[in-house]
Image 1: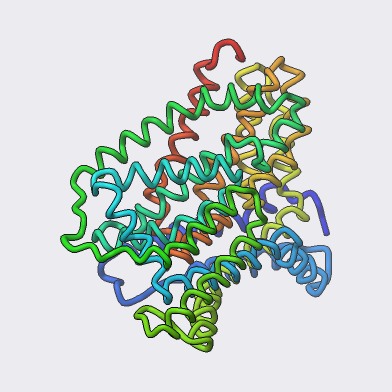
Image 2: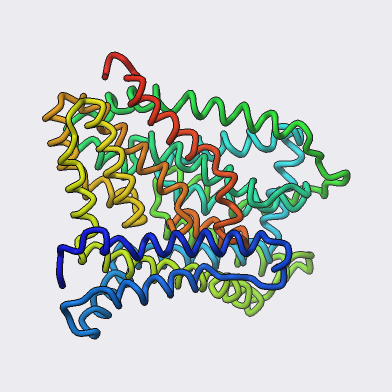
Length: 435
């Protein structure tokens, strides 16, 4: 396959962005309320176009390249997480775990503190477990349940969790992005944490204040049902085991088994909100089917991005940095590099791995502090990953909340805020000591 297509290699991505924008505009137009446009169509059209422009090889070979991307190991791992997350979320909901957890939250927190409380919980858990995916799985069903109970915007409540999940993805010592960023830039995690926290913590504080103000007008339900503490157990177990460092797939399997045990046990005791063995199987099946569209989107995104990579799209992005001629320009080019590659790979860890070495060379050439370079790589990759509608975390959150990713996107204040903060840190040479 030709590896010198330049902008043409990236054109499927541009087409996808145009289609997503068009679909969004069409969907919000009140005159088209009866027509629901699925993102799968946008990805299908972009994928067909990507295969069509990949000349120099038989169609079968192009399709094989696409299929290799759609079935990549890291992507398949995410698809299994989707399946297990759908199974856990549906069996928990059918058993009454979501309602019980929502009632517990409403009985503990005043309504005005729900929004900042959710954001703080997401920040704490994501820092503790070092993964945005695990945070989304644990908290999005609870946030969506609270939104329904309080008649609040489900997209906004889901976005609070997704945003908070990136706080830890960016700062946690055990986050993949932190490990890769510090390794490629040859600096200590503790040093990178200091610089990175100076850049993003002010943004997190501002977002927390914004949520506190937004939460003032929220009203708690007039009647809160009695908390069934036994039914809260699956979510507590998921949180505790995730924070303890258990593999996310093992966490979800354990949570699903607990839901089944409690639901079937309640059924045998004649309690409400329960199911028998086949009722549990049915709930799990519905949850897995509910993830179907997101699995298809993830696979098509993986295939299309592999075609872009094979056609030299990522190499073309990296070559753009040849025109850098200052320290500020070097930092901006590192930010642009990791952002563009993240858009093309939909994986922030892979994006940092891809451009880490070239970023180190750019940084060394213009005297960029390694700790600042690592912070820029991590922060911009988390910002982009938090905002692309086909990212793993966004698709997972959308599936768990039964929304379109486009319903969540406008409310992602934290990823937007850290993008602005990181850009200002480059333009204003902040923090001074590391600039």
